[in-house]
Amino acid sequence: MKLLDYFKKPKEVENFDLLPDGVFTLEQDGKIVDVNNKILDIYKTTKFNIIGHYFSDFVENGTAILNKIIQDDLSACVKAIVKNEEDDEEKRIFLEMTAKRIVENSKVLVCVRNITNKQKEQKNINEKYAAAQKIIDGKNDFLIDSSGSILSSLVSISGFSRALLDGIGGALSEKQEKYLNIINTNSNNLSYDLEKLFALFKLESKKIEYNNKTFDLISLIKSIERVYQKDFQDRKIIFSLDYRSLTQRDCCLDSEAVEYILRCIMDIFLRFSNLGKCFLNIGHPPVDFLKTRDFAANDSLDGTKYVLFEAKITDIVFNQEELDNIFNTYYKSLTRRPIGLRATLNILKIYTTDFGGDMWVYSKENFGTMITFVLPIRMDG
Image 1 (spheres, rainbow, N blue to C red):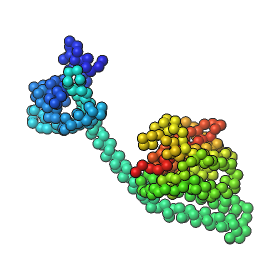
Image 2: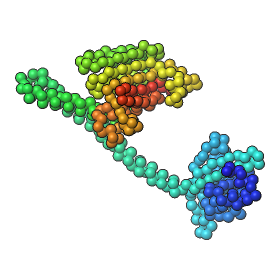
Image 3: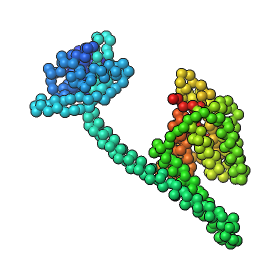
Image 4: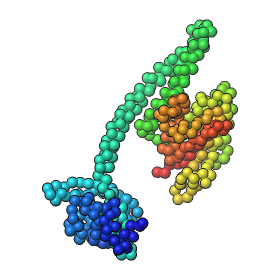
């Protein structure tokens, strides 16, 4: 039943008083002409002390807030003062308020709900969150500051083990060579995982400052292709890169960050593909693609204002639970996945969203995994 129907029935007063929320009926100038019993309960008073007074007497800045929420069809959390008539003590409460202007009888209906206890609960939650965030920020700062010494130790382990394998200390027995290869491989993998984790901690701590400038995106792609070409050949991984449909070369973003994003994709291919095939297609997204994902390029939707990256790796498959939590690095069911893979995916997500883009991961048996992300050609402002 509509709220206004209560005013049309013979028992309108009775029904009006049974409404679960407090209701004010106002003149256009804000003068109160009627209230229900819930209002009397909230304000601990009688109708005699309310009717004929103005709405702003019962809600702080009531008239100004009322006009705003009617105009924009919003709800608002407002403050009110309740005066206990027995001991003359005032108490501040919080109300959730909605309102509607009734054209037929030139009245305004205002519904309020006491949410004072919820506000207190929210305040406690906010305080706990602030305390937890302080701990997290401190942890991130400590790990970021310690990253150099930790990684340098691993680099020395990797470097010296490699030197020994290359014969700098003389001939090695078969068993010595086997163990040194294990040390070298594990130290390299650990260095990669930790580097990605430290990069993620830095992004989470918001300590990254972007330096946006215009650069040639195709030239950047070609330079990265040249660097990684030999690695793919050595690993015997089939890799295909196609950027022929990319027509907009000039890009105004942080070129170092974009390069890091592309290197992250290449590293995923190299480190986590064993016998599969890897494809990276770069072009402009169709307008329909942008529409389905709520993208908007200023006044008109234009695919050339964005760059679409599609990275497919055929021998990695995530199940549905993993996909649902793919951007939660610390989700427990992802622990069987390499740390570096989980961290890298989250790094990509943060970078793309920071630039005003977005990222999605699709995975299916007999298909593999597709990592799709969109970046704007330039950031607004």
